[in-house]
Amino acid sequence: MKRIVSYVVLAVVSLATLQAGSKPTTLRQALKNDFYIGTALNRGQYLGTDEKAFNLVPKQFSAIVAENCMKSEKLQPREGEFFFDDADKFVAYGQKHKMWITGHTLIWHSQTPRWFFVDSEGKEVSKEVLVERMKKHIHTVVGRYKGKIKGWDVVNEAIEDNGEWRKSKFYKIIGPEFIKLAFQFAHEADPKAELYYNDYSMALEGRRNGVVNMVKDLQSQGVKIHGIGMQGHVGMDYPTIQDFEKSIVTFAGLGVKVMITELDLSALPTPQGNRGANVSDVAAYNEKINPFKNGIPAEAEAAWEKRYMDFFKLFLKHKDKVTRVTLWGVSDKGSWKNNFPVRGRTDYPLLFDRDYNAKKIVQLIIDEASK
Ligand code: 9MR
Image (cartoon, rainbow, N blue to C red; front, side):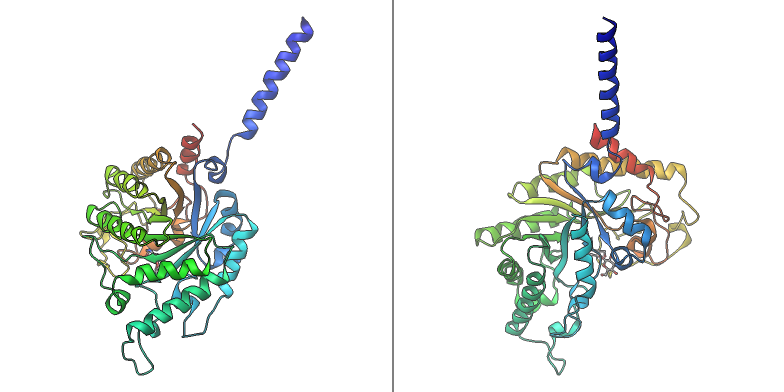
């Protein structure tokens, strides 16, 4: 009898130890059965000069995207002159740590070098020339990383808040079919790669409807599109969780994957009319809208945590539709939000503080995912 009791005690103790041992301690572990948890990386972070990030990222994240080094102005600064050094290292880093790598971004109105749209005399090029340049850029870049980069943001930010086409150079010179062509070129270059449309302010009704119409149109023509990226540059007062949810559900209803691709939650007041992520929409600085330059007060941080958790609860609720949640940066220090929409503020939008310490929010997310 005594022996049986001690066996039972032993079994209970071992089970408890096993359970304690298997308790996830990182975002990557905690979310592994739900969706990829990703981050955007800047140069020092994947090259290793920023040692803290270099070591922390593979532990906490299962997916990466380049914040800047794969944009066309970096990859093809002059016609026919490709620069792949940084992108190659970024991809090698992702492969080494078995992280899902997203290519960002092939066709975007911003950060496209000027030569793309003009001839040697500076005159705007014809539709034929621009289509040819798009094709060469996409074929070269996607072809180089075939089989390594498994998903591409093919077209970025082509639709306005009201659902109309953005009047970008691509649109003006080629017409809306530039989108279809970009997807076709990407598919030709790597038929196995997932192809995404990516945009901000996706919870707005106008943009949601515009994206739905565009995707349906592409699908009806047999164009391969596998996912919709909702960037997720959100604030304390926008958008509502309900509107965001409506977009997740509506997009998934098109039969494509949904990804949250550039998540950051600003803790700062939003200047009037600056709810998007259009890089040129900046507002003037004043002290009132930079309230936390010496640290975020506990109350403000608690409100920020609660709102972040509302979003993460939403993503977990829809984990059958959401395949990846990617933060737009690792630590507050490097976040673009310190300079957008107002230059020179001190913002707190990410999960790790300025010294790469995990904020309390990290544990809250781990707990929520482990429930
Ligand atoms: O975070 C990026 C920042 O470092 C660049 O200066 C900026 C240039 O346009 O682009 C930022 O990233 C953008 C992303 O590529 C597309 N969606 C909006 C992001 C924030 O502007």
